[in-house]
Length: 366
Image (cartoon, rainbow, N blue to C red; front, side, top):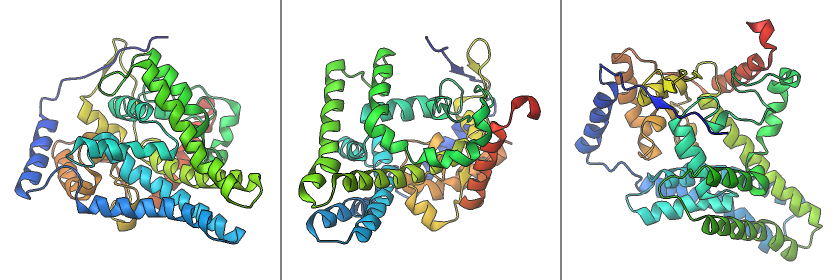
């Protein structure tokens, strides 16, 4: 079924985005800064890859007790999420470096995280960043009926318990990438001729996907089975634990920005028009959290600064703390919302309250 073509309003008489963009550009000029990453992102890259890969090589080369191997696998999951949020994410937005080949290299780190560059860029850069929180267009709201993230989604009886079982499903995020999601997404996106940039040739895209999956499974399952003197099921258990830890971290971080009561989920008019301009739409549909927490700022790759990221996706996350002051001040000047939770804990609690609300029978909450 062909999706309705959408267009954003052009009615911004106060010129919010023009003013904001000028102020942000002035900030970079006055401080003689590039909008891309600097030494800080390189340090983070080394740390995150060390967390992700060092335990893998330790397990393969040293005689480590089973309990220690399990702990190292958990660390790998944390590092896996860290690489995704801090390296892959900026790389695929073209904000990691001013050099295209470095962005391509860092964006390509998604292949050792179980994902695919083409699929990620279509789902995240194109669909999510363009049609943020619009039901039927932003696939981040589509949980295949298992979870109900929006009042516009169909309600099912078992959704009454989704605030309880959702966390169990969140851990499956990257595991699904590795096994099923990429194949289904590529078939769907190629059929719809979606792309971030030039549309790849089908044979080329499918070949890259197939080869990358073979290499991925060889690194994380086949090689450990051949090298380690342990039962095959322990290797698979370690693989699942690594993914589960990464999946929970990534899923929760992603949900806190958009699947919240404060994040609006507007529907387009009958002619496909969205009420607000694109930039103002981002303010209405996006929420920040824990922005004063240095550890959260550092580890999440600025994903707790989602307002800034959605308006300026081509600016590296290392600048978000600074430009957030400009974004907030400008939004308030123009009488526009700037939504944020003071702490991550409060945001997490709010997210699960929202899931409980969306899981209640609509007739009882109307």
